[in-house]
Image 1 (cartoon, rainbow, N blue to C red):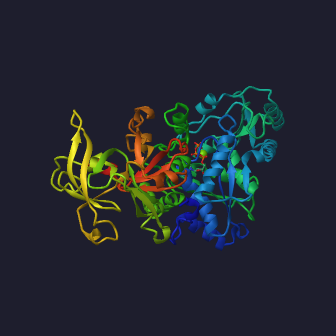
Image 2: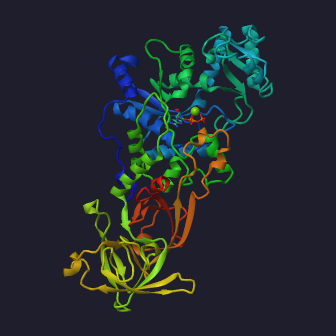
Image 3: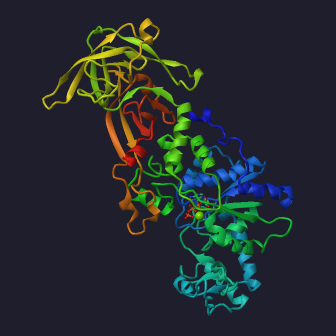
Length: 568
Ligand code: ATP
Ligand code: MG
């Protein structure tokens, strides 16, 4: 029943994707001495989301497939935004997805001394200079893709002066924003990233690992390739927005690498999902402003949110496998992910009965003090998953929607004089109702056919409808959280006219109290378990759930009712 037991690599055998093809070719040609080493480089400035899962599956997956290794490298070069809380969460999420980096956990901050030395060397060789201009001024001089930029008035400083200033920048003598170290490349390059890119900036916020040792911090472009090199990474796989950075990656790496070993950057398309956002900045805003219940809110596209919601690692990995890796940006339908979730939960979820919107049903010809234990399959998809027993008695709860006093044709549920089967139990026939003053139905009266229970001669008798139910006397109360899309529009990131928070779906969470569940569900309601509430959907106990107050998250409805709603 636990997911650990069911966790297996997602991939069925399939052909090589284009990244794997490149790796296979490099290995065949004996590049880097035939070594394969990838890395997953999260910045610890937020929780991982499903987009990161795509990168993780690639970085770890390709290493697994070709017998290489994958490093976990925290790209912690900006102390202002980073925190150890994120480091821990990132580790947990990668493990949960089913990947492991062994003892290869690294931090870009571990390379600050080497990076600093390299910067000093480049200054001495006349390849870098300190610029006293503000970042606004520098941006103004950058030019456009069709017009060359302007050279900084500080570009011709001597190496001695540059070195002295850079040391003093790092000693804390200058204010943040007052000076930067820039590479001296080419202000007229057609590639904007070559126009004397910034290598270091002054930051005085203490770093979560190095404290106040450093006052200058390397920029992404100056840190990433070199960190790859220091770690022995051979294939640095990232997303398409880095294509334009690749020449700069190669430029800086050349300061260190030679023919015998040189890391290489390869880019694939990002994962974008409908009805959500992937920007960590926006996700952080939702968390900070209390618009969701933390990073692991089950409506969030975060890995921790999906885990709390009841998605399985295998369903996420199957989904990522299905959408694949290309060179073209795309918007992936969340329905495809949900399909993968249903597929996996259908195979592994334990079946039980719960009534979300209960109405009392009384079987008038069933003795008042009698009770029977009926045998229920735990999971018909898994023959060896066994059975559990469920109490049956004179008073039950059924779903209010499963009864209609004046039903339309083809209503195969319960109605006056109509017969249905109680799932796993008897056939009943409705004989009447009791109504409140306002017309709402308070009780439904039925008779049962004692011959129709499983194992008895009448068990084969066919009726059109089957209802789920729980015994009123034995039922346990629970709270259920029903989730819907977090946003009302398909691609919130594309709506530039409106603030993304205005696009939130106000009905994305509906909390239902007083749900009636069978005792077996209550007894097994531990977080991490997956249940199918028969005829309703897949549910998982929330981390806030306790024996005093059972809380279930709906992972997903049984059928895709939402898509149908949209088509109406
Ligand atoms: P930012 O850099 O703006 O904070 P990020 O989403 O790029 O956000 P990182 O922590 O730098 O966050 O990402 C780590 C890795 O995950 C990178 O290699 C990045 O390319 C990859 N990644 C991030 N978002 C996606 C996505 N939507 N699809 C696929 N890979 C992604
Ligand atoms: Mg990034």
